[in-house]
Amino acid sequence: MMSSEAHRKAAQSQGRVPLEIVTVSDTRTPETDVSGKLIRELAEAAGHDIVDYRIVKDEPDEVLRVLNDFAAGPARLIIFNGGTGIGRRDRTYDVISRVIEKPLPGFGEIFRMLSYEQVGAAAMLSRATAGVYRDKVVFSTPGSPNAVQLAMEKLILPEIQHLAWELVR
Image 1 (tube, rainbow, N blue to C red):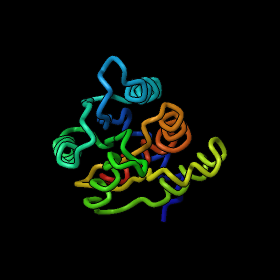
Image 2: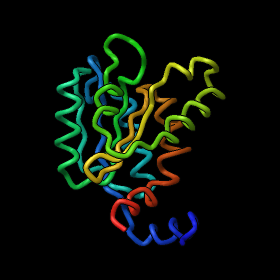
Image 3: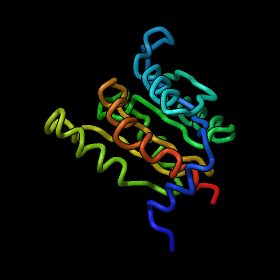
Image 4: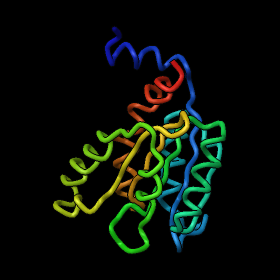
């Protein structure tokens, strides 16, 4: 049985991990999508490739359509940002949680724990989630730049190669 450290070491041999980014927003454009740009910058700085990027309205059918399109694509990880709160228009979590085949509850739990250190009790409003869908790891983070930075730097990027490797080993 391999340890987590041995898994990480084996995973490093696969090199760059291809990612797809989805910003879920009724108002963002490519020019105003600070969080989408931040995901791109952090992933590329860590040596990974962005193979597709889209902005979709916070409509369940649009979120599901892009999830299915990207799940059929070359990326191993799909990162959604936006639509994870409890507002009437926040529906990303609802769509993704319905179709996830293998939930990764630890992502949301740890994300909220780390968020609590930054925003206090408001962290409980986040429905950040992750899991496996059609052999892709899907992450869904809040849309704020601080939340995206936290998720990318503390959770996703430190384990990105390990996550991608687990899908194909």
